[in-house]
Length: 276
Image (tube, rainbow, N blue to C red; front, side, top):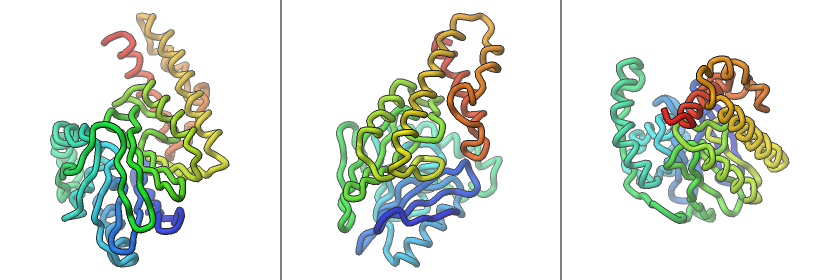
């Protein structure tokens, strides 16, 4: 697991095992906040070990940016912590997370110690604020990748933990393409120093404008292809012809997973456009 100090008392973690998924820690003098948990127990426990033994404080809060497994299934490894999320995250983690975990545990023995722990401090609209030592965290909606998406802004440092609203490749299979475009535009206007993507590397201040433009260009290109393909009876040839490079992205993103995510975007968006 990679770890980096982003700013004073703000840390970033990236999985070496699963899809370059990320998590964060903001630490105060008496306790810490964990932002998202990683996909597998060993890495999540590694975050807890770092907080408790190197930073020498307990984890008081865990924030889930959305309900997906690689961001929320590790809640159970922070006993006693208050879990913060959107109210819809709680609902989806209960309704979809439980059966998904049960199926995954049959395939992966490493997940057998995982239990679904639902958020117990939620909000439905507006923003939520949390003070951690000298840091003020603003928790705000960031839908598009999923309907329950939120992001966490470290106000003093202008560091945004964006969850999967911002990734090297926008991924909307469980969300809405127009909502994620709106979230990306909003992020681009925030005057940030760093964007902590839900997957992938940290985006630095000088890289933010280009990253925002590239993601919005990808969305525009995909929407054009989907609109054309939805009018055709057979779409396989269109899907094959719309390679990721032609959309403005590279297949090397996310350790080579980007091509598969791109195809899934097209497949799902075409079905939605055709009301299938």
